[in-house]
Length: 186
Image (cartoon, rainbow, N blue to C red; front, side, top):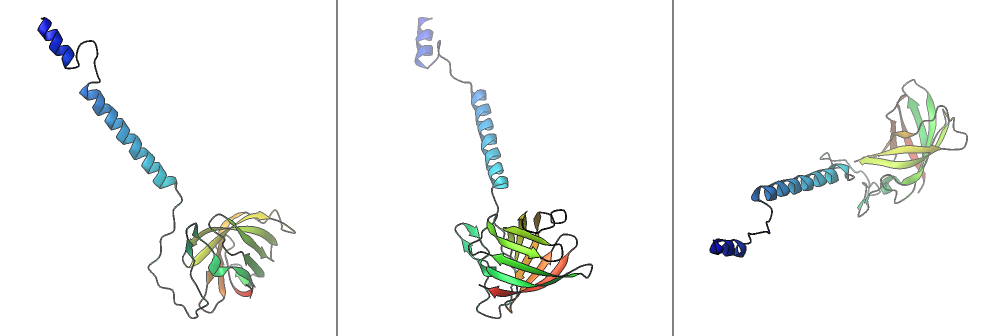
């Protein structure tokens, strides 16, 4: 009997006992589930970069460029500057629109201003997203003589640089509108 006690103590037995094999399997399973959950959260909660489209955009002049990709992400440099033009909503009402986009304006960053004469609305904009070649802006704050009852913050102001250097405008909310703006200052 003394021999069994000695061999039991020599093999780590006796009064000191470790976790069972089943306990280690359970701990490993829980750890794997936690790691999987954390990776899933990171993938779904981290900001996603827009994917490049396969469609080719014709380029007529060397001055037309596409959105620049920088270490900080996508910006609106391709359409930076002051623009003005006319647009027409889906009810046939024509109005003036102006856009001022600062250089190095990135996603969710303050970018400049927009104004539409028919409401009127004068607002600050941020770059909502770029779905190449379209730049979508979010109006975040209205100022000046804006009609506070009619002007609503939110995304839906879309601009696309044309091969001729002009800027196509489209609103995606009601009433929808389309127009063309020309660069008035870089």
